[in-house]
Image (cartoon, rainbow, N blue to C red; front, side):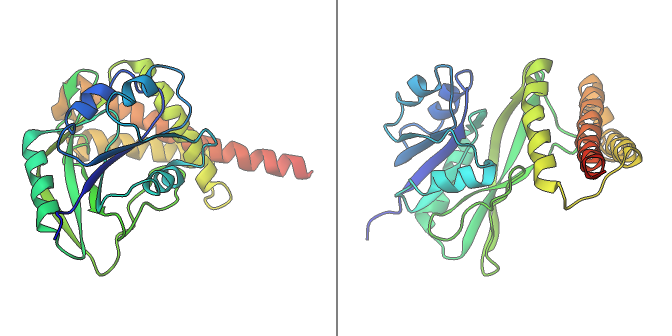
Length: 259
């Protein structure tokens, strides 16, 4: 029997800063690299083509889940390992992934623990660690759901979830304006996804933001991350407030337009 094959898949846009470092950690030991770009204006394509000829473009953004499903349709390998451009596979994790593919067990999906860095510091509390994400599975077994944002792999009820050892290094934000640009898209997608399904009010926006701060900074021990933990708790509370305030304003505009 032929050995099972492994693909790495990414969806990207304007990732020239991180993409090469990410792909360097999988170069040479995976069978194919699939990259689906949503309309980069920087050197992303140029860098990507140094690692793979399987570079595709879809500029009609359908949401994160649907974009991942489209990317998966280009995969020919038996297994798929999903990465984001700002992530890197450690040597220990590489060995674990190779072993899982070689064993080729039926009815299994694999989750990986991410260790994230924000503004130059590894965040080991604040609800950021451990951060288990399902990223490795047989291509024919499942795929991502169609959520606009915060998409997840659909895990069949017949499948077992196995934890892999080793870390997936995640380089989130280097600068504050990078954080605000990235979260702006997530906030809009979240509001789009919940519009008409979730009710909100100004009080709800404030209360959700308040409890978000309490959860991250105190319950999830964000204070142990020092100033970075405090900053992340404040930023997360502001993001939560903005999401619910956006829903409230959309409902208000609908009511106003009916009058």
